[in-house]
Length: 126
Image (cartoon, rainbow, N blue to C red; front, side):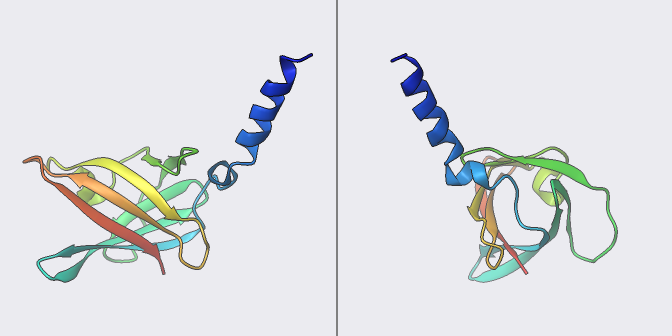
C-alpha cells in the first residue's frame, strides 16, 4: 500500500499543474512583431481557432489551417508551415507561450535564420 501513495500524489500534482490545465491558446488573431533597428516591424497575423492555426498573413484572406500542440511546459509545436518563419531557409527553434490569459494571451517565436543567427518575435492577441 505504501508504494501506491507516492504514485497517487505524483499523479495529482501533474493534474494540478497550471500549464497542463491550459491545453490551448484562446481563440483569436495574434499580431506578430519583431523589434529591429529601433522599430517594431509586423510579421503578420496568426489566427488560432481551437487547435488549428492559419497564417501568418498580412491580409485577412482565407488560408489553409494546420494543427498545433502545446506541451505541458507551454512550448508550442507547429504541425505545418508558419509563413516566413519556416520559409527561405528559416526554421523555428522554439515557440513558448508567455500568457494564456484571454485578455493578453501571447507567445514568443524564436526563429533561426539560414546564416545561423536567431531572431525573436512576440505574437499578442488583438
